[in-house]
Image (tube, rainbow, N blue to C red; front, side):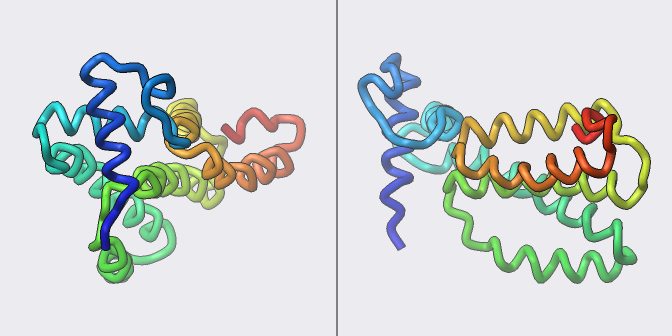
Length: 168
């Protein structure tokens, strides 16, 4: 299936790396992080999407790691690996789309939120930073997907009462 959006991300990223100003000369409704990733990929392998793939592949690995860690909160190791195996089949077709970057950050955030909910302890400052950074990067990728964090923020406020800032 052709991905026309990827060509736009690549061209805008490449133009940005060559000194043009995004949103002034070239424009799209996505956030600047998408263009930055594709622009850095264009610097690595000019004329090819391979550079962007090389930058995104470790991110997908991190997403799978945190999906496994989330499953381990509820399942033994062997069963969590089975769930991860089934889950990883669904992402075999990764296409450098911004939603895949968001997917990784949502898995990282979901793990820390689930761990906080399961343990019952207050969330640590490092975890709060990771949650905030992941929401911020998603805002720079595709702003409407930040809505993923809204229910967790509301839950954190009601779960902690007056100590709502502990929700991250």
